[in-house]
Image (cartoon, rainbow, N blue to C red; front, side, top):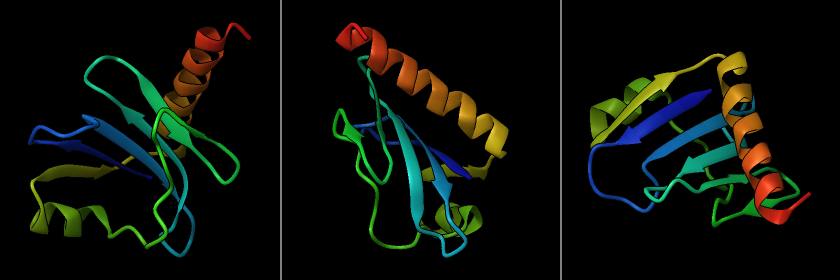
Length: 95
């Protein structure tokens, strides 16, 4: 899992990723300045979140080369972000 918090103004202000063993995104959660939460997996893309088709560098490489703050997170932590995204999407559609 990788979580990053951009330090510059960006479309999303927080991104959490679940990566497969090749570093490709399996699931993605994005939080936007207005409070929206987008998410994507192999079957869904909600509120503009999309899986990257290129491998994600390790958090230490992201921190060394970009203006982002990246850190590894546990699968348990990622699941909390994922569940929050699904709950918000469900409540906004009335499901």
